[in-house]
Length: 464
Image (cartoon, rainbow, N blue to C red; front, side):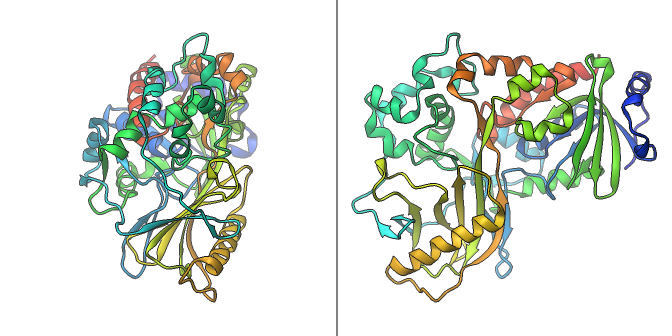
């Protein structure tokens, strides 16, 4: 990679940080940039393109083999049809349209597979849930949502935090007498963990006006060609050698003053690289496992240790041995509100390739790809024995997989009550590090919105 000649201040930084560099790395390529970005998902890619447009030199470090984060697309080899098995839609708003226009993406309303009847089954034994359906979201929920406007575009909590928001959702439903909304609110897509124990504040933060408008008003956006990974491939083509894929930070030194910058050692397929930057943008989920190489101090550790992400996996499977005129949805036969048992598949969703489905899988602990696919196969073999018209002799074929762990980190009630979100916000810029990921919002358009608000502060810090 071509290096940018360091400014005099960065020469000073390099001198200050040099004692921290190990002798075995003395021959590594040194790369200097204004801003280093950790994570090439929705926020990291957005930050990289926009910072570059504003004249800043950047480098993106992404551990996966592609950009896009929770966006995952499999291309059917026979038809070349793209099958999205991560992010499914984008919210139709100006910031999303502007970003897609910037990346030369033609957009239109999202399209969905039609004509598939939902089958609600208990995936543990394949039995059908008689008389079950998901009603539309009601006025009671909307009324409750409007009580908390500070959860609509982030988590900007008052002090003290309303205690009702710190109730598990199952208790909030009962206390506020809105149990008619239970089935609908428990049917939110892409939510990991025990849904009854999720705090009310996270339900309102996730099932907000944006998701409601997507569902009720059709305010959705997608690529005209249906390939939601296309924007990130276009971004990668433009960013070129400023992106290190399949790469991880192994060691970091972050200065206490803007002039000190940050010093990163990065393991890449091309060997070890040393990156010296003025500011660091952490665009991956801010949990301790992800931040181990960054030498957190006590203040940072005390705050970030309060957050944990969910365990969530997705994949594409064909040859299910089930009739192809249905969507298959997991519900519990004997559980309250017919909630599905965990760990397990949430649903098998049809795609535009007949007979090929994508699935969502939620767990209470970490699982490997082999474990997820084995469990999913066992589920399909059970359904083959109970669903009318199924073929029990068929062997499912798994053709794509993605882990979304840690998904949407959250904190417990005590941490929220004690101001963990206030404390996290005060970490912005501390030790030349900025955080922008799915900590206070979950949808891509909202992530881009909060990132756009943070970028001027990052740029200002890089110019000190």
